[in-house]
Amino acid sequence: MPYSEVPGLMKTISAKTPTVGRDALMFLLLTAARSGEVRNARWRHIDLDTGNWDRPAELMKNRLAHTVTLNKPALNLLRKRHASAHPSANDLIFPARNGKPLSDMTLSKILKDEEVPFTVHGFRSSFRDWAAEMMPTFPDPVAEAALAHVVADKVIAAYKRTSFLALRRELLEAWGEAVMAS
Image 1: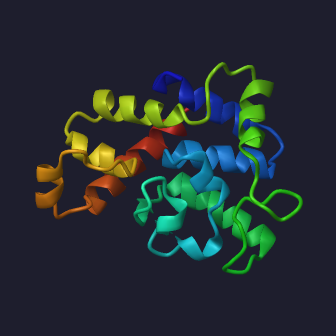
Image 2: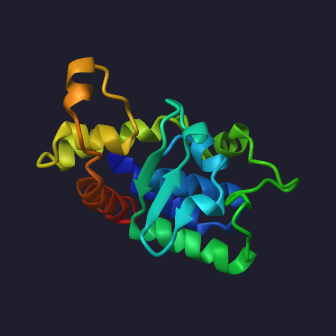
């Protein structure tokens, strides 16, 4: 989906009756995370005080632990869910009715019901295009780090000693504002 259309989708989804699936999709949009990372996220991975989502290696595609800096809208969504569910640390944030992780089809069905001809995973590309076009003062490696992409060049990877956490926090905060701007 072109990034300019993401705020309209967010407005449409957030105007509907809240469901676990809609909340999960909104969280995915706000964090540019992969579907499996969102569907398998547990409360123990979230620090609402620091605004960090510390994803363990087993949750990650590349099997490397990764911290997502949570923007204000993502934190607000999590705080509402936490207040209404009173979960334990090991509980899923977005559980299916049977207590297991939501299926990937749950998120896809929300898009299908809204007649959105895009994939759930494609919203990562929406974020990446937005970062490149709307936030040109942020170096490309910051956006790549926000997406938890591995540096393919072994020489560059050997010398890279930062995760750009502070810059990623700024970038994702701006993304949250952009997504909610409708």
